[in-house]
Image (cartoon, rainbow, N blue to C red; front, top):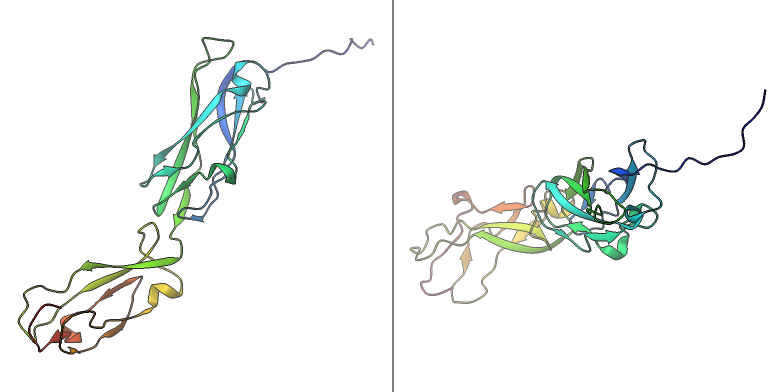
Length: 212
């Protein structure tokens, strides 16, 4: 037998991209997703040279609602694009999502046409509670002793309803902020999945007329 001299196999032209680190799953609204995208040839080799080794990769929201924020376009280094915490890539709304990574078209130089790939599905959960919102205001021009029937949601900083954790069942207490008279009825009620509905059964009313 006779061995040949050593020789080298280089990667073929870029023909695909892959999420080699998927977006963090699950994570909370506004948190960094930190995906890693690798530019590869048809055989799965990382493209470490030519224009595609430093091609720009752009992330977009492929499925699900919300806004993809942060630095969503970044140049690859030796065929790998790492979106670190410094890029603050995040999504503001809860639900199931997929990202799409798209390699820029470098065919005018020594590279190849644009290619893309989608991430695995991942879930965005709400972040901690930071606000409350009246989604149904107290009934206006209501006769005294008629129920006011407000509805209040407990939300995170991005506007998502806080449906889990201790704040999802927090006790909400109503009080008079302005105007005269006493607020009657059951003025404190526990939230259910982040929502407090003061119903007719709570008998929430005023007996003194005037702006409140």
